[in-house]
Length: 356
Image (cartoon, rainbow, N blue to C red; front, side):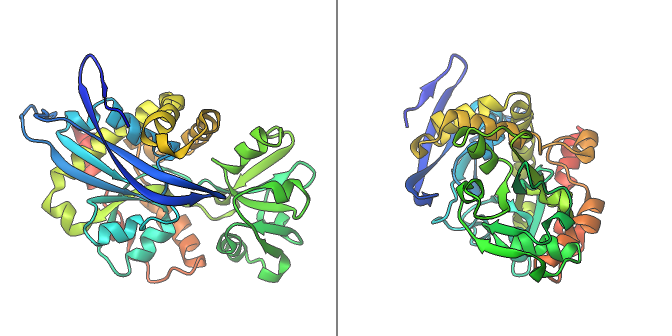
């Protein structure tokens, strides 16, 4: 990847790669970070950049577009941070394992289940969440819509994850034998071909395939009902770290969050800009498609806001909602001995940012 120079700052790009297979294609995973020497923090004190590494749960695509914008627009540099991105993917270590092993200062988990499962063995705290709703959904064709969990009864469900189906059924007191589950892969073609009635998908992925590959129109030819609408809500792309690391270097975590909020504000205003960075820069070696990434970015943007973020700003979380709505969903997925929410989530860093 070639370093680029702008009129106002010089940007150095450090690429990290790991082999991964996405769908049926073997891809080279690459992540990038930005840094500059002699950075000046927002507090006005000149200092050497502070190294700060972040483990991702997936490849360097538009899902992380707000972080890419924070790097591209110099927000981390302005905070005096030199951020290193550690890409994830099917063949990469999990974000949780990298943070646990001190290979990363912070991690970005895909969904809540992996982070909370890891809390059983490690003292992690979630310090913010990009997406206020999980993009997991149930994809259906127009003649057989899924509007409530009861609509799943009697259906053949093409499942990327059987656990997702079982979670929704359990939460709605529907017997598991009320449906037929057929394991399937990332491609929704089996649904289009009539091999099943419903397909477990991600609102930021397979509906776009339905549109671009099969020429079907959303809300006309097909629909996608979020798992949260069926009683299984959850945060996604939650940022977490070890408690002792936060205690030791709290200022760096506040700086990272403050810069990240700015990047996600830019993303919310213009998801296309995040998609372009994913395609042309941070995920340049992945062969990403700009149209697909743009539509995916628009879908991700729809998941970023909630009453909690309206009141406190992006990344904020609602602890009451976590305890009353999301903890039961986690328990239905088999995660037990959940910690008290005020021990699992530390919003004090975001509160500190909001107070300034």
